[in-house]
Image (cartoon, rainbow, N blue to C red; front, side, top):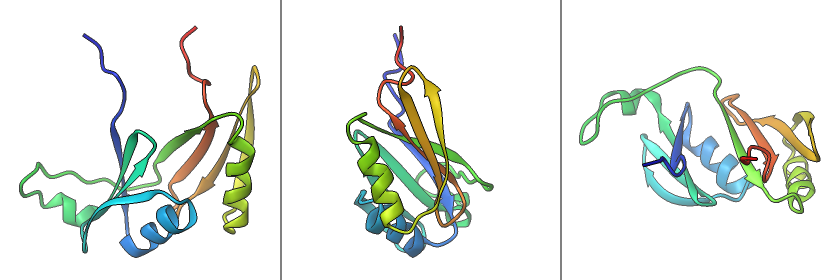
Length: 131
């Protein structure tokens, strides 16, 4: 019995319109769900990125309450052949790349921020593969 993968991850954001403009408009993630003043959900490959207004999700309802704050981190995996195209896309969208890092063995990643200052990373596929 094993866990296959993380299916979804969540960021708590201050403005859904800014988050939608960033993740959908600038990065091109598909919007798959949206509730005004509560959340917007995006497809990220086989995973889902949930963006919640913290105070709205704190109240709970049909699901248990949850919330968070602060600058969180997540990484998007791309193929090695698409890595430079993603780097170009981010820069062409006017998003500042804070740092690029060489992890060795031919793996690179770069870091940038969303409108809520969450630290996002684009990493080459295979970096954390089992040996």
